[in-house]
Amino acid sequence: MQFAPVLVNTDRPMSYEPPTPPADLPTDVIDTLNGYSPELLRDVSHYAEDLAEHREREARLAEAEEEDEIDERPDDLPYDVPTKATITIKEINDNRYYYWQWRDGDKIRSQYKGPVNPDG
Image 1 (tube, one colour):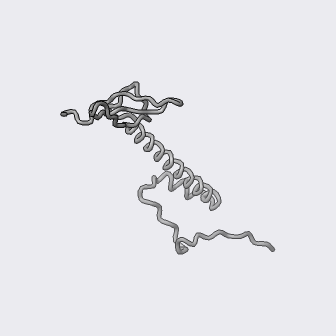
Image 2: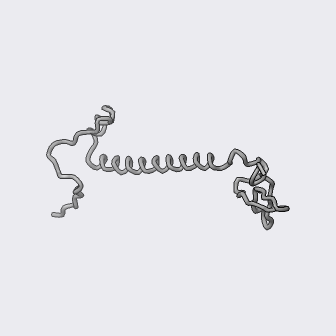
Image 3: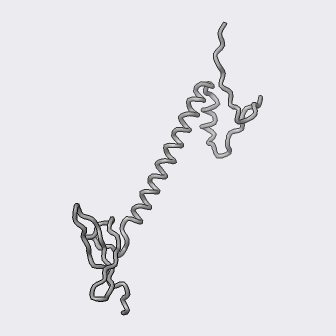
């Protein structure tokens, strides 16, 4: 006679009482789960865990995308200047000026932004 191995969850002590469902779990879900076999419950458990991870990952990606969109284009960035541009300071005739600067293939492009010290 051979016995199949039994997987036991050692995270929680084993109880002879049925588990108490979470208070926010809908009654129809509880009723449905109560009708399932142990094998099907384990399948549902694995699927639910995978689905939760997937949705959390999607939410993180969507949040990161929104943050990127917010950070993508500063208000003072002209539309003909790419978002990858950085601000540099150039000194011309003893005056300092801000320029947007970015790489375009092998060339470095610049566009005037304004004086470093607009008062003087």
